[in-house]
Length: 203
Image 1 (cartoon, rainbow, N blue to C red):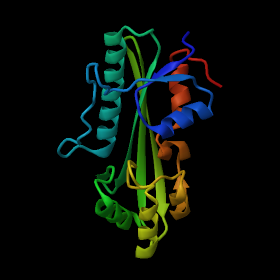
Image 2 (image 1 turned 180 degrees about the horizontal axis):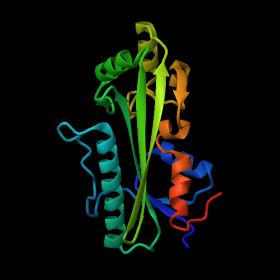
Image 3 (image 1 turned 90 degrees about the vertical axis):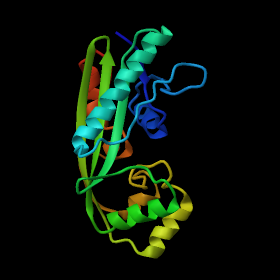
């Protein structure tokens, strides 16, 4: 039984969430100078449904992590990967390319319900399992002044949908149905349940 897992992600939110529930991990960067590049292309396929997309990317990240462990001859341990998408209607809102893009996304979310799909996969050897968490978030109506004030904080950067539920944007959320940690980027209930399938010790 392994006492730690490999986290195939650079997300500080995922590191924080794993530490929160006492799961020991080592970072497994899929792209690192001087070694083979295991980066996953996260471009959505044409007409790909959001649920299909988030599952596919998550599984590809997990497989890439497993391949990296094997290629580097690292000690055997489970590999955990995750992918989170903010979805408005059937449109995936990725990370903002720039300030104007972030403003446009926040305007589209203002006063609306959207879904947050958060997939997590765990792999070890030939076994690979995935779970998907779906949360529904409703934003309060946002004035242009409020949007601009939020953008000025810089919190939107590197966040799906240009907001972080654990930060200042928590004040925008009128209602949440689902997993708070899933919206952050790693659904902890589903993560722990998956790890149990690999006899990984959790609380």
